[in-house]
View 1 (tube, one colour):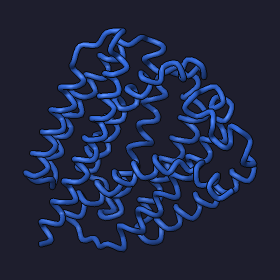
View 2 (cartoon, one colour):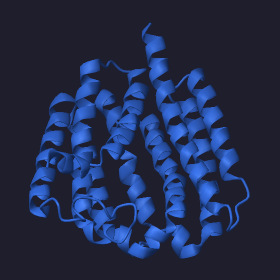
View 3 (tube, helix red, strand yellow):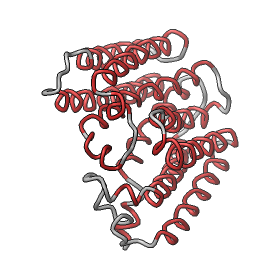
Amino acid sequence: MLKGYLSITKPGIIVGNLISVAAGFFLAAQSEAANGMLLLNTLLGVAMVIASGCVVNNIFDRDIDRKMERTCNRVLAKGEVNPDHAFIFSLVLLIAGTALIYREANPLSAVVVLLGYVFYVFFYTMWYKRTSVYGTLVGSVSGAVPPLVGYLAVTNYINIEGVLLFALFCIWQMPHSYAIAMFRMQDYRNANIPVLPVVAGIEKARKHMMAYVVAFNMVALALFLVGEAGYEYLAVAGAVCFMWTRVTFKPVTQENYVAWSKSVFKVSLVVVMGISSVLGLELMTTAI
């Protein structure tokens, strides 16, 4: 039973988002006072709010989850967890996570994390995901909130650096998500989810992905030019951006699009790990 409740929080998604929370925290801590306890409380609070959103997503999507090979074995889709009990579980996580961020970080961070929750649960899960090709874009907004919350937990104010950080992760999610949609296209067709590769075809989706990767490169550079990120960040960001651009701009055909999209997806993970890690390394170097 406990394993079932843990699974509907989507631990993999939580871990991925916490990496971005840490990235925002590390960036802000280069110019503002911060400590390890604040980082741990922020990570825990955001983790609980994300877990709550994932539980609601599992509850609401259990009908389409049954139609997708990737999700058909989820416990809510199989009826192994009571949806009403799961909903209560999500409320407890949401209240506890928001309260922790409000108390241990600041009210601004709590407000922003709640806005991200609203975008994910109401605008993405309950509305755009099933009805519009722009669902991915709406989802990217909520996905870019965790690093901003990590940043705001330290600064308690929004500036151009915070806006660029938010934009960076928002843009990153677009080619990342389209890549998943490409190598999982049959699943999305079966569930009648209107993602761009299904609706408009592989070639159009590829052009969008290339444009987003170029935009990502520009914002990554802007973050160095106007923010506190140092030359270590510039070197690592330049390297991973080059890798992502190189993979994304490779020719794509009906025969190789699955392998290509998996490559784009894998390199996107390297990108976010590289940028997050170097920001933490820069902070440690500065502290020493």
